[in-house]
Length: 168
Image (cartoon, rainbow, N blue to C red):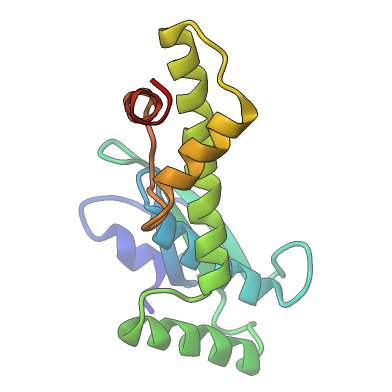
């Protein structure tokens, strides 16, 4: 793990108070579900059953003109309990063989994102078609869209096409 000040290199500056702390993981505005899942699973490991991060861990945000922002999950290597550090290192090592720290968390995030876009797509399609879908039609659309795998995103065009296939 690199120190947070090393992430910023010689072309920029680190202005925080934790320059010697080590970066466990990062996410940015455009991170995908997998990166978000891994970030928050690592944060949960550091919380160790508590509701907030302990004094030896924090998240620092840096603005970036290219990607909006970057969140750094960082730890104080001098304060973190050895067994917790080992858990973090094991989780990071596991990523070398398999990209997901927690399948349940990843699947839930994936499904939540699908549901958000699905709900928006249903509303947009109803507005475009000037109709109200029945509950059964909405269930049929959802079933049809998730038969193979859960898509990351659904738009109103897909819903309209399904409506034409299944109903009209």
